[in-house]
Image (cartoon, rainbow, N blue to C red; front, side, top):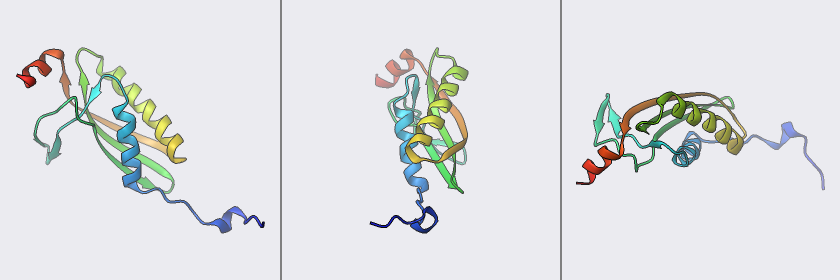
Length: 123
């Protein structure tokens, strides 16, 4: 069996959509975060729902990943600590799963959810 030199084997391309799905799974496994309503021109299409997955947009260019994440945070969890933990987990896990470098993660917190707001939405 002949082993080809690395430069002759070809390249592996990871699609934006694949990275997006991986990042969505990573975020869904985090505690203290929930989903965000889809938005068009800043106007929410529906309500922010802690039971729905976060909105993630991924862009892969030159072996580097940029993520934009919209999510909600459970109240009274500290927003800065929650988003920092989400960012660190995304960088680590998405990087490990794709073999690419995650060089930027922008997080937008669209809502804070408390047990009380969940009770109101169920009623």
